[in-house]
Image 1 (cartoon, rainbow over the protein chains, first blue to last red):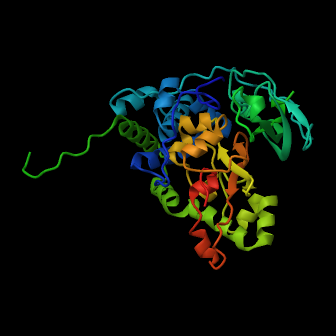
Image 2: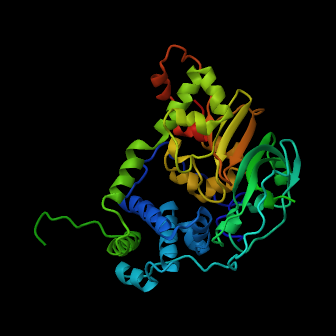
Image 3: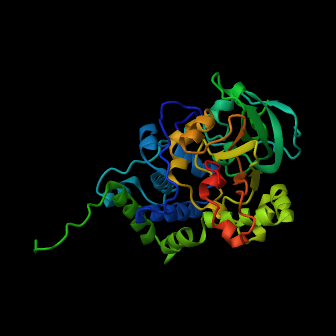
Length: 206
Length: 197
């Protein structure tokens, strides 16, 4: 989905609030969120794609104004409700108030994962074009490179296609490639001497 | 209220929500005893940038190791005992006087946990994720990472299964240091690529 999570290239966020070092968890609830995320995804056997998509479906305002651990908590609670471990009413009663969950899955379930790709179509040095495609469900093809041309710099073997695994019990395996884009080809104001590399599944390329 | 008593810190809405989910999952028998404490302990004391620093220091003192690290990062990092979730497909990118590498995840917060631990807040927040692929030279300068104006910047967006680690340049004047002393010089930021040593 063309969601709020797909941030690459967006403007107006201001400076990075940098800290040179920080503890893994600044509050106990953050460590608990981390643990509960592992409990829920393990119990419901959520794929990485399904888990990431449960964060991507957060209400955009909530996504932008909450941190990483709150994203994990919201995703864990959403998956727990969707898989029948708990109900939203249970959560809100215990929390003594509103418990925001992620929005519904917009893409239909996938029954047939489709044919996998075992042999890479491209080799290092090949020029490739990213498909201009707007999936209704989960994808790992960022908006900022769609329709752009780049050059393959590395082959990384075959991996489960997130677009399928987020919405299907079965898996489809395809090669992934690291593709180099010149900043000047991505942005009208692209900076000189900058290359951006994005790792892409075979399906994302024309 | 008795004299000298303290007002307890107010419980925030997020803490109440976390406690609610924790209680419900615990009642259903889904949270193993001690699991939360174990997760906390691992990420607070075992997994963090001190692991990546050992990898970098080894590469600085052992040319053959460095070659293995740049050829097959996952296997070379496993030689030092590090691996696991978010570190199964490691690629190490080397900084040189003319090439500077920096890692980002624009779609979420992918990060090489076994060697760097959980990512810092700013790595996961919108400004870094939005800007690093569009104006890295500006963002790096703002973060205090000064580069020669003709240095090539290579940004790596961790959008699939590979997780990246930057191999920073060994600082000059460190010839006499031991491997352990060198590891002590390596910062988290230098291995993300937002700092230099």
